[in-house]
Image 1 (tube, rainbow, N blue to C red):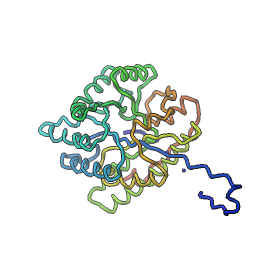
Image 2: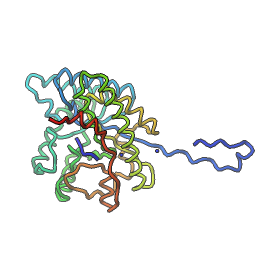
Image 3: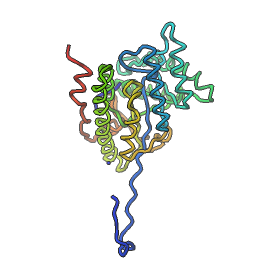
Image 4: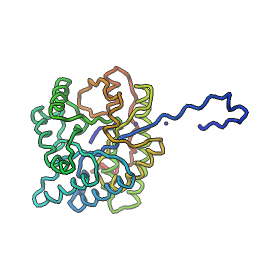
Length: 313
């Protein structure tokens, strides 16, 4: 999970057509979709529910024809009597031809986990996934920090990132961070109330629309152009039911969906990042802090959704 923390046609008379300059083409917007906490994260996660969420989430990805990279917590597969069935959930992602990355075994935060113990979490985070990917000649190449926390201090951050390179990993950054997990928790708590779930789903898409505008503007402020974004969402019931609506919203904003490989080919991802600390934040915010540039607060979560997600005792 993460922290709370973002775009005319001109008709010209034929007589003036030769005098008027051609309009500038709209800048292409691209986005890589990444999904964390595979095979499932949420409330009420018994095996049957996880199977349903996995099946429906993959069906929506296939229907949209969108390249996706999923990040696995292999500790979730280690359940007595269910290991084979839970491993089959990851196998379904492999069978769908999707890329998979390492999200550590048990999702600890580097902020309060000793470096050696965190490195062990990475080592134990991908053996099953690598075995499944090997059948198609592939392997785990990307690492995503749990909670987007890259370390308590710059020394730890740099030491861990250098170690990752030696292990053959590339860090999977995020530019479009968000509080999707709050909407997902509210959606889980509203199970059985279809009207409330529909209202939460609508609010989720509207909230993500607003955050998209925030991060697009921050990217332009930092780099003077549209950048290739990386979106973070999670493998939960909310997205299993409404990923198509979310992707359609991004398409209305002019996005085309690309692989994580292609998104990270944008030179912005070579920018210096010296941020370390408790907050797990977007790489755009990290780049701004590194440059000493101010930025505004992220769009807030709908208060009523937060009340559903975290009701008072």
